[in-house]
Image 1 (cartoon, one colour):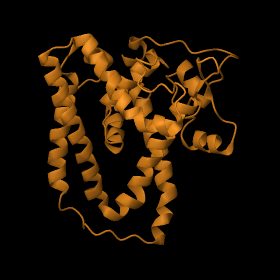
Image 2 (image 1 turned 180 degrees about the vertical axis):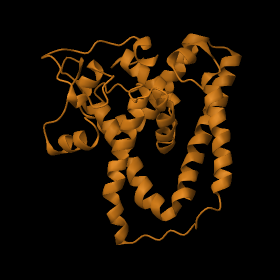
Image 3 (image 1 turned 135 degrees about the vertical axis):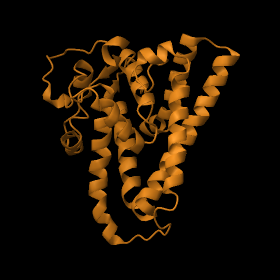
Length: 271
């Protein structure tokens, strides 16, 4: 299935088809993997050696997913393949991330239209509510485009059920493929690295000013930011990313002094 904002806008069954197909695929994979490895959990101190690899993996895979969303991987056909592989790791697939990220660039820091505006929230609250806010914004977009009726509410309810079943099945498949030991020693630290670091990027680089306005910034002024930027292809160069979203590593871009990002038209980043 081609994943663009135009498809989401034209087809009221876009996410229904995507989540249902993914759920069915995950059910088949889950059945095939159910007896793959032992269900015994056996951790020891040697498994701490896996932790650095898990952290790097947790930074690199979402970077690849993010760039696949922007069609930054060449040749172009690889974006869907890489995006879905990475989307399997982060559990929710590529389509919801591409649609929500298009909305973020088109409506950055709009309280109603941006899926993850910081708006003065503390980080833990932002982290806890980002998923729910993203679902809210995409749902509102869906209803504003396709209308509110018994039919669209039924479609929305069914596709959300398929979405959450797909999340659980992906986690189950990782548990069975890696086994309980490496699920805990590798997958969970990698997943949590992705979850926390990239939530922090969206929170810290959209800086709420004293007057209530929000300024998008690059961050590279301490050891933490420098390390993540090195391992995560300039992930905290968020101003540069908004100025040049077609760069795989936005730290390579030298933005003109005091230049501010313009809001992108949906078509500019979703075609």
